Length: 80
Image (cartoon, rainbow, N blue to C red; front, side, top):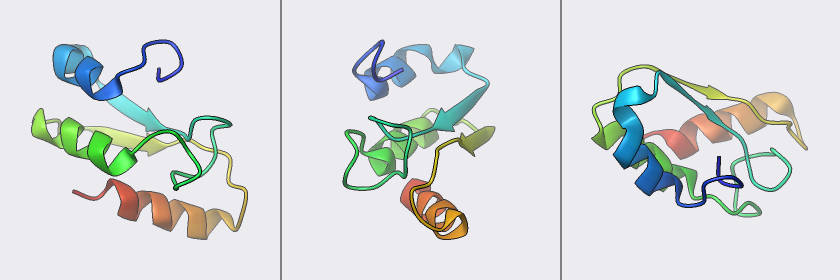
């Protein structure tokens, strides 16, 4: 969505009533949600939470290091 739409937080705020679930993945490359990526997933997760969303956020990325460590880090990054 970042590639196609751009401003994710504005898009989430404008369309949250139509969104049933979210997926994460770093840009570029769909890797970990870390400082090497374009997106600030902590801020994005905060915007999602601010809409009152109570559904699922799926971490859908291709780890470049230990997968469980990457998943734990993603969960911590998106905790708000």
